[in-house]
Length: 284
Length: 304
Image (cartoon, rainbow over all chains, first blue to last red; front, side, top):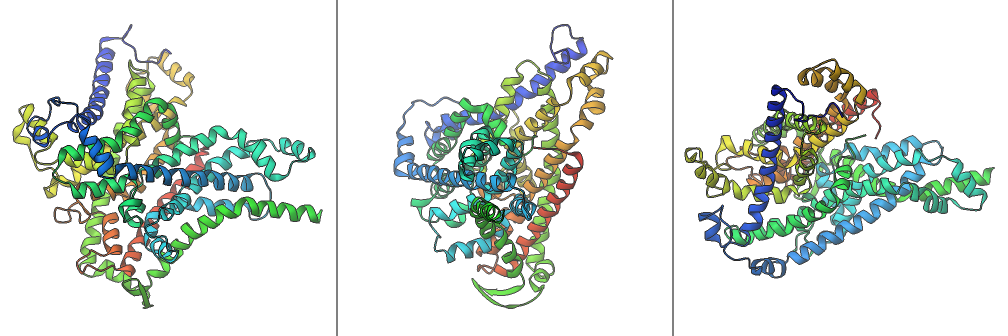
């Protein structure tokens, strides 16, 4: 396109502008990549080497500390708990969220807008601010120190935005399709399952990333509700680990690498979806 | 006809009830309970008697709550202002540059978004180590001959908050960048080309044509910045600790709220009444901001 900033045929002033722009952006790229690379390299170094020669390469590439952190320090459990909590809460976010969106967008009835507004109110209310009543509620339910405590809260956290995004998509599907299916003898659930859901599949992918990343990364609720090591998720487990080994930098960098690298690797393969999904709430 | 109506009502109930129950029990009920709890006096986790607005009065007018509360609010305001000034301006710049397809734009775009995906906790601990007196940042300063600039970044009252904010910007600037990029990409190409052929310079092109057209996105990012600034917690927890060390200089409303609710403010026992009052303040500020955004967004007819 002619508005692209290219070197070819550009005036001197423009060339300087392009060069400066690239320099600034390359600077930020370095600022992102170098600390991450240093983190991974430090995990192979001894504590002394990390502090005395921070920019040098490690002398050996031994995975012994990785094994220590993954097995002995319980990161495999933290990882499994994060996976469990994220998978279960996302399953129900998608199921209840799509059902509610269907019930809101495919029927005309009094109270329709009210139901929609009740769901949307969750977008505007920060759940963190309600931690005291939530704590008392979870205590009453006997779920303190159970992974179901955070699953229920993540489910509540994910529903509002899911309904907001999915109901918007479902409204655009013509009702005629439904009439045709009804004449063929489909009931409402079959229409939801066989006709509407396949048509909103792209939106479901969007909603999945939009909610799964913050749920995977969430720290506040697991911090409050998951106290014993066997139920902790990765972020809280990492925090406990940092509290216990504050001087063993080699171990700490290994723990950080284990916490950060899986997300990075997943992103390398699906960057387009991640970018689209994460910005879904702010981009039309 | 009557039978069809009844079966329709049953189907509607079938579809919306599970979600509504969860939202009611875990979002709406806690909201009302926060309000209710804040009007009572408490001993540990036991609700005692109705005290009206007493908790709010204690929070705003008595020691130590008054000092801590306004100190924390001041820091949240500082977070908001510096994030807006640095992060959102950088985001606007990056978004604009990326939209002009500079050489390498696709690569830059993908790398910028990497830290956005990481948990704040991991980022906080990572930079917490780099910012230690013997950490990478000081080593780097020494390497490039700026040893005189070495500091215990998180240990000095006047540097701790700015350091944490910079780390947060490091993690998050890719988000506004890509939101602005999407907004600029949706500006009609003909407008830009026409202006371009007229010989309008980059500066004028941006301020006179692009900027007015992306105001809805700017509003959204501003709202997210306000909400994000009110929600600062993990950043402090991981880098300077729950008490907002040194000497409460990095304390925020989030950490103060947590300490009050779960008991480590001075006396050391949970203060449910005062905690609920702080929670309510957070609610009100967030709600007011969101409401404002709904009106602005509605007026601009932005659809998702």
